[in-house]
Amino acid sequence: MDEGCVYMILHDISMPISEDMIVYKNRNDKKPIFKIATDFNNSSVFETEICLNLHTGTHVDAPLHVFKDGLMLESYSLEKFYGDAIVIDLSTIEGGITKENLIEMNIMEEDIVLLKTKNSEDSTFNFDFVYLSISGAEYLIEKKIKTVGIDGLGIERNQADHATHKALLSCNIPIIEGLCLKNIRDGRYQFIGFPIRIKSAEASLLRAVLIEK
Image (cartoon, rainbow, N blue to C red; front, top):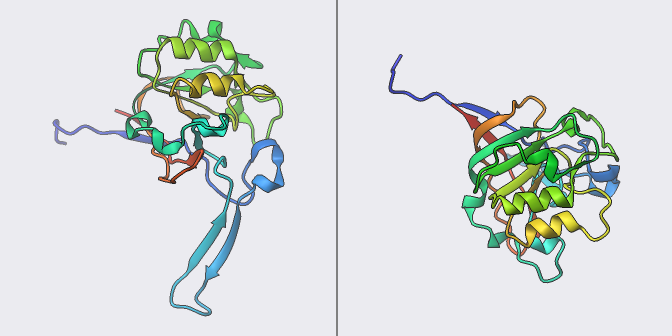
């Protein structure tokens, strides 16, 4: 074995896209639709069309999602989706994640913060999913993090004014929702999760990966 080699373990933490996947509030209009465009009965190639909401599965929100004249997805640099990440295990938390739940977690400036909760155990949509409260969001802003992600299909729950979204997005902190963290230990990793390059969009799907050495 070459002692100079560095061996990495890759963890895919993205939701598979399928017609029967979990979607926000079980809404049928959020289910992706697959259609065979061309098959071998009438062509020499096989092609599939897909129709889906940009907030399907593992995706990132940009400011336009909650601000009428907010910045679009292309306002984010790729650096927002690559770098040092910390997975924080908050599986015992019920309801909202607060500042008090995060203050002892050794969060560093420019971290990509990934919140693992009991949401990771859900096999169907849970209307009582764990979310990030406004005090938790404000604490992450204070810590000057790079990006935040959570294992629920929403980072907030029943906030009429979208306070958590607005606080984070107004500070140029992208929000990644729909992560799969069930089998991921808490700790430090490298994160890569580049969005699909869609112009003039408020969100995009991404393939999220954690790297441990």
